Length: 77
Image (cartoon, rainbow, N blue to C red):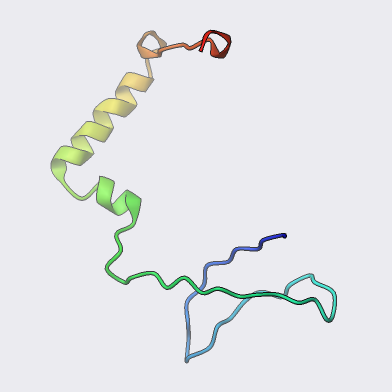
């Protein structure tokens, strides 16, 4: 089974999808997953407080120094 995924917004009660490159007569099954409007975007959540913003800023600074990296040999796992 192949899968196509699109995210769109209902406008005027209509579901608008881009043209699908599928042969005429192709049988498809559509399942709609409705996102809650109160659902928080991950980026918005991570930047939602000053403490979170500061933590992310410090983490990015740590990444600039490769001495902070932990190297793992997958063959030894």
